[in-house]
Each structure stands twice: as structure tokens, then as C-alpha cells.
Length: 413
Image 1: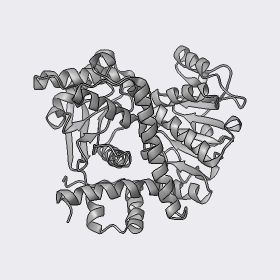
Image 2: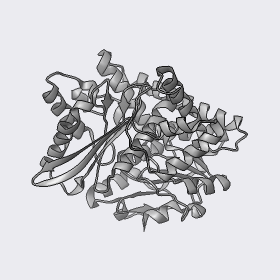
Image 3: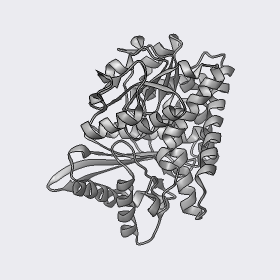
Image 4: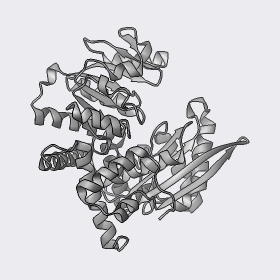
């Protein structure tokens, strides 16, 4: 294991809570907080240096699995934290993967296509020896996409001198991608929302939904929700948001974003900030942007009765406590956005076996896996007489499986 440990107070505090409830030893807790491998490099492009990381957090359940993000504020601790969450998420979904993550401190929004390709290829040049379909499998994350995965696959195969499409997921279909992968995260979130409505016997027609984040996940989820008859009253991107209490036409919002560069410029809505979107009088708040959006500073202002975390780590530890006390249900990221890594699992499996499955079959398999995770988490919460939130229940399930695997391997005694 690496000598480095996570310095993320949200994760540390949550794990301390899990330690008490799940009766974990100090040794087990330290082991869970320590990544197996932290790899660092500086990518040199046009006389500039871009810090880059690949973290394999834990692989007792299988090869590492986790995305690569390009963002100007990426840090080592952030990448380690994301790797920890991937470890928990993969375990909860009962996938044969450990947790991993990668990042480059770089602003892709101001980069040319050539620079984007150069950064992508240089990333693989730096880390290809610690990647592979049976070692550590990347995928897209913030500001990366299937084209970037295609460049990375090509560079990896050039370096290793053999074809290995399973070393990376969310590739274009032409490069052995999966027909479901692009919409899998959003579709998984939609499945969770429908389970909430069924379990709690909510009136779907009366619900108002707001979505913070209008990238791949937020956009696709908004389309799926609208097609199913849900009313979306607000959406936002990095430049702001738009609000219409009678409901937005998502197709027109997408057109406006394409034309004007932001949903904030949608002519049939009221311009609002990301902060204002979080505090709207709605029923379901979907967080599909970045970390730490709901904190102790705004948790008391949240009016939604349900929060769905489609981003990683959007609610901090203190906010979780406030929201639980206020009886606001938070569906944690490790459950709500697991559809993406489940879709990656389908793609990886197809690449390894050569058995290509049709979209209808994969959609049903995704539904089964998401609903199974939801039912397990709800069951554990009820076992604890609802004195724990859904996140704690999810962590208890996932960590039990990780520790069991570690002990069977002899890594924990």
C-alpha cells in the first residue's frame, strides 16, 4: 500500500462513523483510507507542465476502475478521494472492480483539439505501465469524453504493441464501445428516482425537479425524465441556470445552450445562479456538477425533499447531518450514479469475451443491478430503524465486502 492516506475530512469523518456502527478496528479503518498506489507525472506540452495523477486505491475485488478528469483545479488529494468513492461504489454494485481515479490539472475549455489529443496521449505515455484490462481501467470523468478515450486507447496499444480494448471504457462504438455506456449513468439515476416514487408512493405528476449540472449526465437525465412525463423547472451549467416554475422544454434548452453557450441564456426562463437553483421550492434536487455544492452554509436553505447525487461528493459531511435531521432524503453518489460504472462493466466484459449484447438486454440488466442496490441499502437502513441515512447504509454494505475480500487474501489479519 502507499504511504499516503486521504486528507479528505468528509471521508475521514464518515469512515469514523462507519467504524463505530460497523465495529471496525483501527487497523481496518487505516487500511481503507490508504491507497495501494499513487502515480504522479508532469506532462510536458509546448513548454508547459501539467501535473497528472493515476491512483489505484484498492484492488482486492478486482482491477482498479475509475475515470480520468481534466480540470484546472485537480489535486492529488481530490484524485485519491475520488478513487476511494469508486472503491465503495464498485463494491456496493457487486462489480469485480476495485477503486481508481485519474486527473490532469489542465483547462480543456481553452485548449485546441490538438492540445487535447496531446494531453491525452502524454497521459498514457506516463501511466501505461500501471494500466490494463486486468490492472486498472480508466474511463471519462469531468471534461473528458469518448474521443479522448479513443486517443488514449490508441496510444496504449501503440506503447504495448497489442490490441486491448478492455483497458479503457466509454470508447466510441467503432472501437468496441458499448451501446448503453453513454447514457448509463443518467439511466441509472432515472431508475433510482422511479424506485423512490414507487417506494414512497409519491405523485409523479406533482413533482418539480431541478438539475444542477448540464453536462453529459445532467443533460441525458433531463431528457429521460422529460420523456417519461416529469416536470423539470430548472437546470444549470458552470455559467448559471434557468428557471421556469411551469416547466422547461428540455429540447429547447439544449438548443439554447448550443446556440448561446449556456443554459443561463435560455429566453423562456428566468436567469438564476447555481446557488439559487439549489434553494428553489422543488421536490427533487439532482446534483450533477462538482464536489461540495451542498454544505453547512446552505443545507438549511434546501427546500427539496429528495436529493439525488449524480456528481461525486456534492454534499459534505456537515450538510449530510443537517439534511438527515431535516428528514431530507439524500441518495448518495455511490448508489445514485453507479449506472456509469455498471455500463463500463458491460463494455469491459464484452471486450474480454467478444460477446456483444443488445441494448435492450443491457438496459434490463442495468435496471436489475440498480434496483438490487437500492433495495439492499433501504433494507440496511430499516434494520437500523432509520437512525442512519442512506449513505451510511450504503457504506456499511460496501465496506463489509471489501474487508471480507482483504481478509480472504491475507492482506488484513
